[in-house]
Image (cartoon, rainbow, N blue to C red; front, side, top):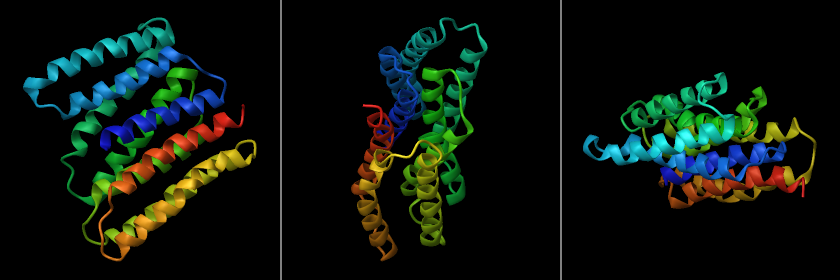
Length: 227
């Protein structure tokens, strides 16, 4: 499910870009392919990395040229930085032990890097308010990865409030429309999973599926407003 959460974050960034009238099918396809191959590179054993690395290099180069026209420009360099940061964090995220380190790594791996990078590829610019959905989804997607540990339930509750608050603030800053809150469909299942966990259970597959659906519905709500 980690893979799906990263891909859904990429889709979220692309849909937010589409809501700002920036749509390119090739960028959509190769953004998902590049993110997928980067994830595989970060997870494979050294002897098996070369195939995933080759796929990543080719897809990233095609993506850069499709978006920016050349690899020799500042925008291309910025995207490469996103790629390096994403790889380093995805590789390190598996080995972090303290809960707070896993959350910080997860927020970037599942939220900030894929959302902002995919949006930047489509639009060639970034807005500070985009950190709200990027951080919000990153928090929600990463909380299961650090399940357990001392004070985890309190930690989970506080970060959940912060995440949903960030997600809700972003549409408030845009033109108001009920479709911008389509993602709230996922709130009941999130509350259900949170309640089970607080009562002593474990977060299940439903939590991961809720996170993936949340990302898609969140972005789609802004695109549907234009239809």
